[in-house]
Every structure is written in C-alpha cells, then in structure tokens.
Length: 312
Image (tube, rainbow, N blue to C red; front, side, top):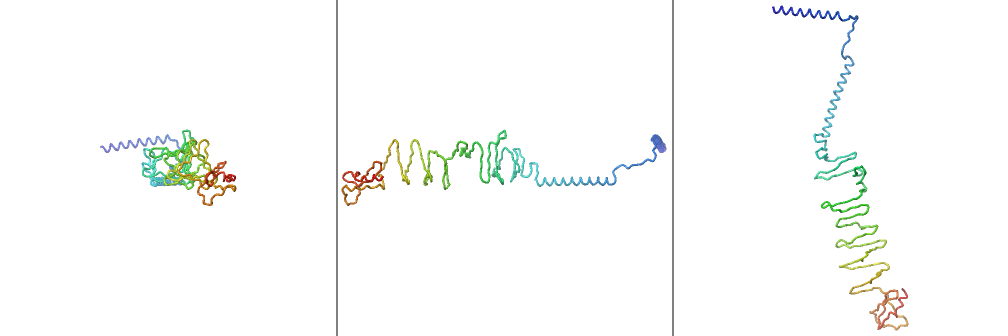
C-alpha cells in the first residue's frame, strides 16, 4: 500500500510539472529561427588570459625571490640593516660608512675602544649654524691646510679645561706654561714683542738677533742685563754709544781696562824721553772726549803729547 501511495504522489508531481511547463511555453513569445550563442571565453582570448595569468604568477615569484635575496644581502633584521642599528638613543653604525649627501646630526660618538675617523677624498668640512640658518662657525680640513672660521678659536686642556690657545680678531693668547719654538730659524715677529721675561732652556744660550736691521730693547723703568756666572759682551762694527741723559755712567769693577787706546808722542820741542821701555802711561782726554795715553813723567805730559787730538 505504501508503494502504491508513493507512485500516486510521483505521478501527481509529474503531471503538475508538465502543466507548469506547458503553461510557460504558451506564455513565451515564439520566435522563428532562434539562434543559440555560447556563454564564456573561447579560442585565442582564452589562451591570452591563461598566458597573462601565467606571466603574473612568474613575476610574483621573481619579485618574492628578489625580495628575499635583498633582505639576505642587506642583512635586514628587526634591529636594523647591516651595520646600521636602530637603538633607543639613536642610530649606531659599525665599520666603515660612506655618505654621498650632507649628514645632519646632533651628536656623533665613537665606540669606547676605537677612535672616530672622518675621511674624504677632497676635504672634511664641519659647519655650525644658528636658528636662522646663518653660518656661525666652520672647520675645514683640506689637503693643503686646516682652516677655522669663527669669532673665537680656543684650545683647552683635557684635564682642567684651562685655555691653552685662543685667538680672535683683537689678540692671540697662549695659556701654556711654556712656549717652545724648535725651528732652525727661531721665531719671527713682524711687530713689537711685549713680555716680562725672556729665558733660554737650561744649558742653552739665549740669542736675540736682527740680521739686517737694528735690535731695540726699551723699558720706561730700565733695562737690566745680567750674567750671574759668565761674561757680558757687547760687540759692534762701528761706534758703541753709552748715553745717560740725566744720570751718570757708573763702572764698578776691581779692574777696568781700556784696550787699543792711541798713544801720544812728545813734540819735537819737548825734552827727549829716556831710551828705556815705557811701562807707565797717563790717561788723557781731548776736548771732544777722546781718550789717549801719554807716557808718564814727573809732571803731566798730556799737553806735550796733545798732538793726537788734532787727528780726531
């Protein structure tokens, strides 16, 4: 009975579907010579689509391989790239780095166990600018010279920060305890030199020389030249002048010698001197201040030998 019931239901469904199809066919307009068009991509269009899809797939694979190769060669990591490391305090470079364009930084530090080397094929220039972008200082290290352009240049000691050398438009100050010039030609000054003390090194001579002009030492309260353990010599080619406008010239020594003084001779009217060798002379002065020797006698013989004053 169940089988017969199922057959009846299926027959009813088929009859209903046939009725619906028949009704839809009657309602649709009938067209003569109806043509059927295929839906989809066929022929050369389909082959081109497959080719472009394949080309896109190959390009993606090549790009992926190149990206992996670049990451490996450049040593990209989470912390940075190659020798470049990004830290909390800034950027850290290890090894030799080359900059092709200007570098703007606030501070540059080297590692504690290695120096900081700045190298260039032409020169190394360090510029300092103010908030308006104007150049306030410049340091250039070139092949021929090291140039510094600023309002004031200072060199300080590393221990106490004392100024060792400073220069500005008005003066140059040297704050070192000793200034040592080791050149064979010494130090050349174009103008005057003011110093409270000039001293040579121990066991060395001090020499002040002007090869082609005069050497002048002036002081309003006096010039003192002292040789505590040696001789003092003053040598000149022409005249040696000792002049005191208001005071006196004081010679204080156990022995005072005047060498190469001219010796006067007696005139023909004066009595002849003894033929013995003369060992004692009289020091005479001409009216113009010239000194000469005259053979000593019982009295003064300067007048008798004063003919030497006529030659001066």
